[in-house]
Image (cartoon, rainbow, N blue to C red):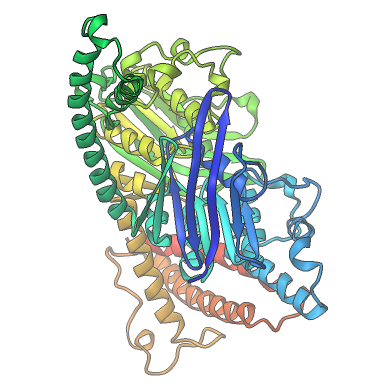
Length: 599
């Protein structure tokens, strides 16, 4: 395989802080590399140097293979808020489109429209200013993927994406022949896309071929070998220290090189590798007492203008339960959290119906997506006055007097998390806690939360995080509908995939007009037996739903065939794409009602 990228002697520092110095590595065609490092170690700085957005302090060499096409996805996407989605992408893609003839330009526009549809952005004329953060990220990804570049450089591609979008991106990159170098904290995404893990640790680069588990094993071997060598050097240091402590007369005339060697040995002897793990017996902050009544919701609905975010929701939260909340962007997850915690007030707008009662002993700790505001000049230690806890969450002694504004984004969010934990809540809410946190911190946080003594509610798009911590899920289906699924996220996805496979099988047995093929399974037996006796009216509704679902599935399959055929004029393509989005919403609503009647 040819070498796509060669890096030699690259360095970067900010003031006295050295991020990396004199690093070298190579990326070959077909490599899909995940870069792992703690927050503040220089991951984004390294990617920006490779993309030509920043420069190395030491000069060095950055050599890309001649004529390969490179696309760079930054964490923050710059856009014109007044432009439509489609116009924003096309205007920002000039480097890919300016030399295309009309036929190839049309094919490029087709790729853009298809990718937007697959990312769930069905209205390409929607203004950029009206998009959520997750939707903006999907626009940025569409622009990058439409280029079909040879080499993608990506900084946190899954941040702010919902799980459907993450799984589409995962599948696309997994099956792509592109070469990839990315920073990610999503461990499932990393495992399913990447074939190499590169670690930036203490300014050095270490490369591990294979998946994430292989990386963990080989990294542990490296650390053990390093610490064994440190112990050997310490023994040598003790002997040299005795020599240095000898009388001045004894040292007079001794070779200067031995004195210099002593200081070199001392520095190495002090540099043991201590694993950053949480000692739960020392650092676990127990929540305050929580009574039997936690939060009780009865027939709660919430509307904002003509959009329903919560519809007739009833649930009594229990002590010590662990709930994961999943759903598409803008489905109402954060709105739900604000409602149950009393954060919504009538003067904020919207209409709330039903009853929400909070227990008298309830003490809520709420980690918001937006983070928190710190006072100018406020130090790490002034923010969290607990050195042991700070140390366990990767704040070293030399960081304690640093002003908060000098921390990286991930370090600030980590510090904000500690301010929540110090409040000793007995009902802990984490709204997207994994955004901007590095993998090392995520593992520490997971271990911490496994031992947390209180109720836990997590909104997250990190599937690994949910699998480890959630006992059951609130699934936000849209239009205010919330389903309670018992089990972790992997079990939920398995259930959904089995259900969708059954739907596809039945759709294959009907024509485009919804007529059931003679001799098919669907023609000879009902879709599924009901688990309870339905009223006559419900039976008629269930029958109508089954017929509607077959028609909608058949239309969906037909539309997908047309959209992927590459033959539609642009106007018809956009109309078909818009219908596809509406169709998916109709299918979702019909399937939810069918499930309700079938339970």
